[in-house]
Each structure stands twice: as C-alpha cells, then as structure tokens.
Image (cartoon, rainbow, N blue to C red):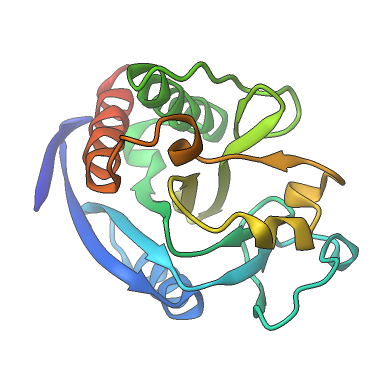
Length: 211
C-alpha cells in the first residue's frame, strides 16, 4: 500500500501485524542508518507482543513490578511505557530535513492527528503541558516517543484501542506515579480496530501534508 501526497513525496505504508519489539526496533535503526537522501519515507502500522520499553534517559525506578513481561531499554525519548496486543502502534520513518519539519512541529502534528481522530469518534481529548501524549480527562490514551538521527526520525506513537490495561499498573507510565490510562474501547465500544487503523493513518496524512 502506498500513501502519496505527503509534502510532495510518496510514503510507503507497511502493515506488519503482531511483532516482537526488539526486532522491529532494530529494523527501524537499520532503515534509518542505511537510507539515502532519495529513500522514500515509510509508515509502519503494527501491534507488539507484551513489553515494557524504557526510553534513552528513562529511570529504572519507574518500573515497579514487571513480572514476566520483558523490559527493553531503547533509544527513543521519554520514560517507560507498555506495549501489548490491542494497542495501535504507528512508527514514522521520515526525512525531516527533506520535509523541512522541526521536531516540535512534528510532535504537535502527531498529537493533533490523534485529537482529531478521537473527536471524530465522539471523544474529547487534549494535550498536557510538559507531558507529551494525549489525555481523556486525567487518563492517558496515547503516548509519543521519537528518535532523531541524521536528520531523520523513527519510533512514533501508540494508541490504546482494545487491550489489557493491567500492565500499566506495574509502572509509573511515562514517569508519572499514579497516572491513569484509558482506551478507546472503554469510551466507544462499537469502534472497530481496523477502522481506527485507517482513520488515524488518514489523519496523519492530512497533518503531514499541511504546511
């Protein structure tokens, strides 16, 4: 599947299914390290097997009781979060220099895409100052984390759709003790996973195409 019309460049979209975190992370690194100025940007849509990921400067004390869920220290920004089946992951492998796109602007565009998606499904959400991600009331529904290398980005966003939220109680999500989490299924049970895949992809396309 190809997605065109983003800043005048084609963008290849890959649906990867359910994948273990370490393999996909290393694939993102390899893609970024070997890409050239002419390499087409890519967007990867997937779910992860259960895993806690700790950002580059993440503090291990925010992992309270991982149990049998593996912990992976990775190179994205941010603290600790949880990934598992039923959570939509979108990784953005973009040449920011070619797009003339700054990191703060990119983060704002990603957040706005999620806000607009939720609004279209009858859910009011908002940003929170100093805590990247999207919140419904006081509960976090989406997380962001990026890595910039050689003017290009990888990693991306996670949106809780219809998953087991219990593992979030084993950590301080994103480094905040007691932070509540929520998911789209609990707010709008009739919204299907595949619909969210397609709808969020289109919102991201719209945001990235805008000046």
